[in-house]
Every structure is written in structure tokens, then in C-alpha cells.
Figure 1 (cartoon, rainbow, N blue to C red):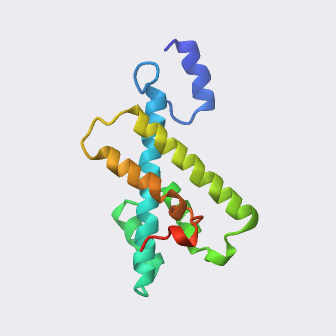
Figure 2 (cartoon, rainbow, N blue to C red):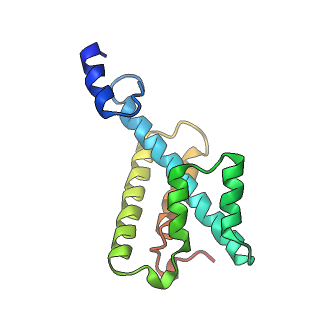
Figure 3 (tube, helix red, strand yellow):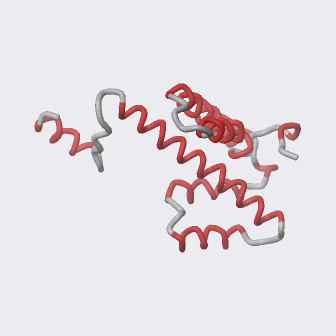
Length: 145
């Protein structure tokens, strides 16, 4: 990268990562999205598991923090898990439906990028299918049994 370009980018970016040749940056962004949505899906499933047994979901977050596994973005997402179903309506529901739609689109792009590791596509497909439930905008008939 020319030094002048680097100077300009350094002004606007907190971190500049060289992802490789042209196109690699887009692939990196999609890969980061896969990791993020997988974490959100795991957080939702884990939260529901703890809550369904009468446990305290806040203890789950505390344990994740202690283990170093809870990132800031996933922690922000976890706040959505505490919103009662009856409050998911109107503009909030529209916003969550939009987020679920964006996630589904991003995960479709990930599947298009390639299926290089056996089983990886299945994981991405499972995370993609979970997005309406992850964002709590699934219909009652869509709930897993």
C-alpha cells in the first residue's frame, strides 16, 4: 500500500488489517460475520438452556467473561435475550427482523464463498436457519420442538 494511502486510512480507521489480495477483505468481513452470528446463536441457545432450568442467565455471562470467551459485541447482543416476547413488536420487531434478514443474507454469502472444509457448510446453514429465533422474530409455528 502506498504510504500516502496508509496515512489517510490510519486517520479514519482504528486498526488497518492487510487481508491479502483484492477481494480478501470482503471474504474476511464475511468470515467475521459467520463467527459473530454463530456466537449469537450459541448465546441464545445457552441463555435459553440456563433460563429453562430456573438458572440465572447473568451467571452464564459472568462465567463467559471470566473465561475470556465473551466479546463486547456478543455481550451487547445478550441484552436482547432479556426482552420479554410480548415486547417484541412495532419498531423493535421491525428492527430485529431487519437484523435477522441481514444476518441471513451475510450467511448466504458465506455459503457462496466456498465449502472448503467438510461440515463447515452445515454449520453455516444451521446458524442461518436459526437467525429468526436468534433475533426472537420467529413465528410460534417456527419454534424448535
